[in-house]
Image (cartoon, rainbow, N blue to C red; front, side):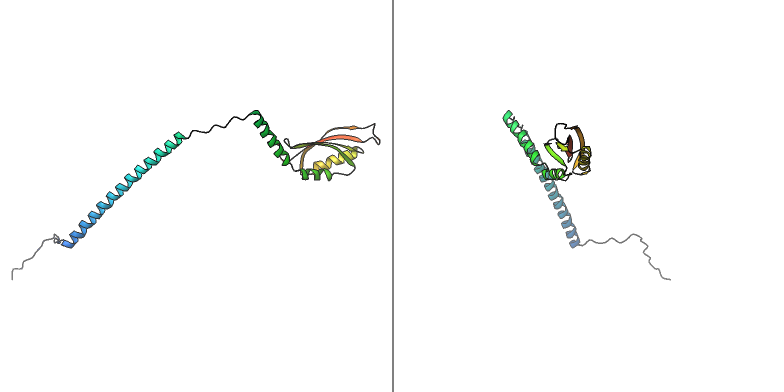
Length: 178
């Protein structure tokens, strides 16, 4: 038998690193370091600009004091009040209110109408031939959706007038009361 040499080394063989592989590794490490440095410079630049913006904003907020409203004279206050009352009066739904009053029975005479645009209410004085006509007129006004809180305020028989009519006063609101 021949002597056979057995190599029983269980350790892996060491690989040789080639020179081009080392060059690629060095380039990758260099690029990584450059990228990290560039990112650090960008973060520092952003922080510097944020500080400048914060300083500018605080300087602006310190330099602009809140503006106090000017004091109005008595005549200007009265003029503003007049304009508000006028616009409220112009915003009154006159067409609807007149249609409501005209839709009532014709045997009732409307004598006086006192609207209050600021209270969104109206008071009216009317005459009817008798109590049935007066109550019918009141019921007609109460059933109309454009009016609310329709109330008979007072009534009296006019003994001196021919036919002894019933004079009565009604108060009602329109829209939402303020």
